[in-house]
Image (cartoon, helix red, strand yellow):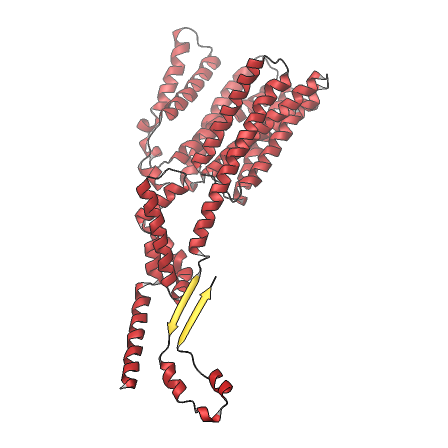
Length: 458
């Protein structure tokens, strides 16, 4: 009778264990951790968006549930989850056609007022270039820029296929190409024309051609490759910074040849694009990271101009001083790149840093105006210092929040305290078969198989 009771208990435990393994499987845990509602709220939190009280409560409770689910999984199921989760994630991406981190942007894309203004301005500039080149007078001189601005607004209506499946990143890449192309085209015009009487025509013509050409190249490359926003922003940053550094080197060397300045600007632009692309490949910078880097570089340039202003008051050589803002801006960029690694600033956090540092600088200018200081060092230095303090305070605050959030998620997924309790009643029958009279009590006890096993890992 006792044997039957133990056997029945053993079967119940085995059945319960088998049922538990079915309930808490690797595939089941993956499916629970990829629920659309949970992922949607989590992604919004990662972007820095605010959550309602109900959403925050749901997210907290659901992550507790996932942690409990994971703890109830067997070791084999956990290993299976780590082995196949990448493959299952790919299946999930394939199921979400079109697959892209910007899928919502594709489906919900809309033209903003900012896009309208930018297109009108570029179109008007191209029209103004035509007026200058053809030396158009009268009413047509004002009408041509307006017509060109209107044509650039009609682009999506004239060629709708071109704008299919575009995202906000596509527009940003296009605008970046237009801006850099305008500058590089002007530099090429300066290189070719130099000091000739009609040099302005070459500069206007090539700047317009360069803006249109590089804008189209960036537009189509972005549609094909879906370059991350952080890489676009860093290429824009270095594409502007490097030409200014090149021109500063010539100024420091007292070079007066405009052709060489055009060549330095053009060469610096190409170099800057290469640097920006290579830097972004070494680490996946977010748009928020790039915003923080750019703002720190501008502040560093302001500090460099402060040093220049102080030196000019002491009647030092102004040509050599031109290099100081260039060097400080490069230093600020490098420091910013190192500082943001591992922080993963969201778009909201990066734009908040930019907005707030600009506000702090404006307050600094206001303070200088109230004090009626006439010192160039004070006029530039106070806003720069206030912007730097604001930048670092906000960055440190966001960094601590992001690292704390990352640690919490890491604790939920990888650093759990694990406790297991196993019952093996069959060992009772095995222990009964050991002849105790042949062994000492100590030897006999060491040969016993345990009925209960407790395991605690951390």
